[in-house]
Image (cartoon, rainbow, N blue to C red):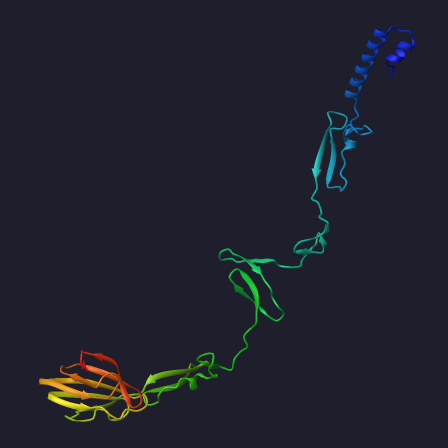
Length: 286
């Protein structure tokens, strides 16, 4: 393209040369503006058609020229890409088929709560502690023996239940499906009625002593031994009654019955002494 130097060289006046030079530059710019070729940026060295300038290196985008030879447009369709490369984080291997290499947490269904997986040693099982899953050592199956406390020696339940056999009894049973059952019950009462004035109400194991109080009467209760029970019941009381039972026990020495229905339950607690474990009808204990 001729410029002002060219025009001055051929003898044109300077003003005319400058004007022709400006017109020439305007024409060049307009020609570039209306050219069919395009550039990606100002530093692009090669102009080209738009269809040639738009590419897809990984073939994930398909270019289609619509209405060739007419009012052409360019259609871009994105294909479903296939992931590739190395996996990271909790995943190992490569895409598209990575593998799970570790679990950083477990989400519960009832909360929900995210549980963090802590240290889990070989041979342990998972145990939840708060919001953490840790390794715990399984408890070895026992032979069925039990302890009463940490310093106790293990024994079978049948041997641990040290009932005073005079008062209670252990009854072995089976539920029919191979499971043993152990029942604990009081031994049957031995009923001793019609005690006369001055009698000893203790007369064997687990006595049921029914007294008929007629006026002022006195009874004793001696000879208790391992785990025995004694139920004293006033079955009738007439003639301004007052029956006093003298007994050596824990914190009391006598029990006075003066009304029908009054009763007291005594249990031997050691050293041949009875202790009151229940009373009804308000007998007087002194």
